[in-house]
Image 1 (cartoon, rainbow, N blue to C red):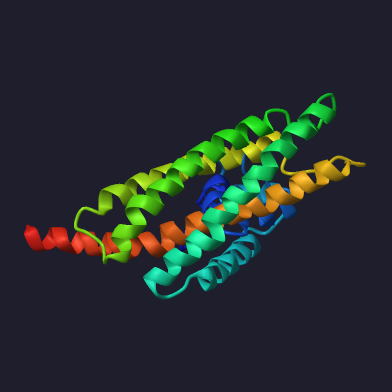
Image 2: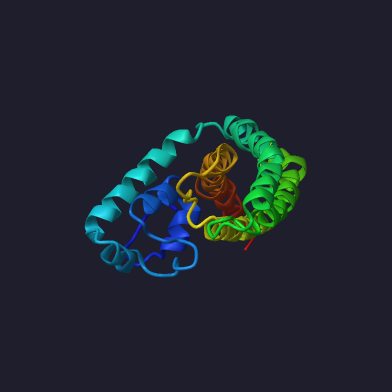
Length: 228
């Protein structure tokens, strides 16, 4: 997301802009179940001036651009090292920890029932997505692109939408990653880890959607124009 408007929905902003989810949590703005409202309406309901909230989000847009190496090969390497490997490693311990918290605290009204299943679905979808990038899309990009690259990029964008939906479900079942009073160490560690994981995944998708993919979509459009 390169520009934020007051008529954008809260859900779309949280899924596409790094740091927006945490900002919304800080203002007690829901972006899962109640996320299909416009930013202007959500701000008023939260008692925040729409212009002030918009300014905070626009600052995040500027900050998000700093995490993008200029060279395409370097950017791909950054995505692989910083996000692909990190997601795999973190989900490997977040899922069993979620299972433990659900098992031990399942009778608590704030228990994140169903969280481990959501994370398992996200892991499976994300692993398939990342393998396609690692084995097909990124090698094409490192070779300079292709006239037919628009199709796999479109597929990756569609899969990002599915991953964003998983994140909204995580937000829902964890009640906005809100810990109940007296939460144990495992529950606290789980939500701390989830906060980082979800923020990382949004940043990962942003770097691809807003920085990497457009470089090759422009190239593909130019190739089509030359043949027509």
